[in-house]
Length: 202
Image (cartoon, rainbow, N blue to C red; front, side, top):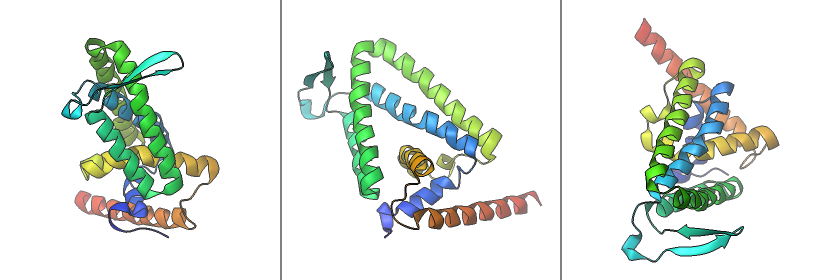
């Protein structure tokens, strides 16, 4: 059964899906969205910890990892909790990936150091964002969702591409009828956008 309000997955997925209906554009986003999330956490690693909370150090596969309880951790946690609330199964997987990204980015950031990390982040962000804008301009023929709802687009992007992959590869649905209902909403949104675009042209 679908939820309402902030945790209305159908609404969120239909909103984002209406801007990502072209298969090539979807693949581009699948490739680039999570690296954007990862590298954002990478640069946030260098922000100070909250209330001077001591860092946590542990060994992973023989390598030392230092976790900083800062803005990067808080961002990953908010994303993780939100996704888990949207859908228990896929959301829990997305939440797990968010925390893996936080731990992984912490590991990479500590080894690169700030002087090199920010350069890696800038290059990665430029490549990933350029790829997505090309996807919208050359294939989707529609402006990115972030131009209409910045917060919703940023928050939903990682979960959208994961859920899209789960649907395509495993025919996963959060609940029976989800895909059909979302596709109907996406089609209605796209048709409305085309009508409004035609009116502006004429």
